Amino acid sequence: MRRALRPIATRRRQPDAFWRGWRLLALDGTQYSVMNTPQVTATTTKAASRRGRAAFSKLGINVLRELGMHNPLAAAIARHGESELAMARRLFAQRPKGALVLADRLYGVPSVMVDVWAACRRVGSHFLFRVPRHINAQVLKTLPDGSRRVRLNVREQGRPWCVAGAVEMREIRIHVGRPGFRRHELRFCTSLLDHRAAPALELARVYATRWEHELYFGYAKRVLRQTDVLQSHTVETGAQEVAAIILVTALVARERARAANGPVPALRIKFGVVLAIVRSLWFSLGPIEDLLTEKRKAQVVTRGQALMRRSLTGPRRSRTNPRAVRQPIRGWPRLQQTHSVEGPRQFKVV
Image (cartoon, rainbow, N blue to C red; front, side, top):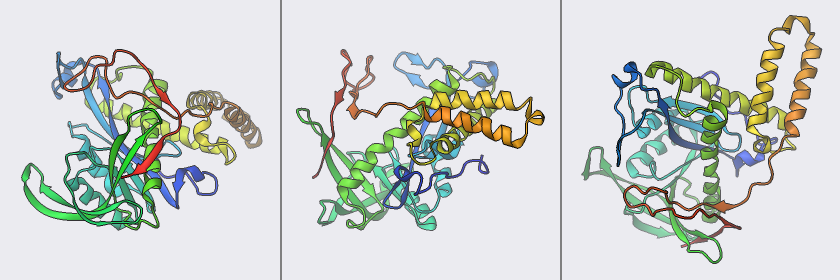
């Protein structure tokens, strides 16, 4: 996987994959369900839910990928029940040079951001993480764009009452919403300390693109896998199956980039269509490889790429779905009527 997963976006052909020269990356995790075989149940523990134990054991995975290409750069699989943060720490050192990494609130705690910042300094990269509300920060200086230089206490792992040190970084508070609806306040911390090189409002809009990571997992699970449970009977073969899924998404990302070739945004080309064409070429050219000349094979691939370019999704709407669940767990509001909000977002530094 380390040999196969590598960056593919270029500033000339895929400018949407960059922001002010920084390659946009996202770091996040998900889980796959594994069959309830004796080999699996003997080595894993099912998560607890409000109705008892979960139906299936879960195999966690953490992926670092290019936002503008849906291209995985590195992945860690929890073969021994590791947490998402433990897997993420293994990926910190694998980020490329000149990247801006986005992540959600799970990673926006001082102890994690200190490790990320150290890894970023070694390769010349930066991060932008959302921060939970309960994290306290001491304001040192207010910058002209509305952001702040703050000091955060770093607490010992497993002993949150003990302060091991402090770290200074830049904090951004944003009110985001749409006309006629209640606004929400979001907190971010970043290693980009220069407000002139990275204005606060622009960083907030860049973070909004992190949702592409959720779409990547959706394609990998619903379009590529198409089953709710992995077909493997052991944790080790389940990890191999997940690794194969990651490698296939990398292959599809490369074929999307080749088919787009600049004029067409790569993410506008339908994932399912690219997957179907790549499968058909794989099974058709494989058995007759020695019967065709290199020129003929190149012509077949070129026609397949032309077909990919004609299979485009419509312009993506700017919408928001409610953060609620139909059967609430803990303090989540109950979702009784489904609705979504459309229209342009409004950002305001506070």
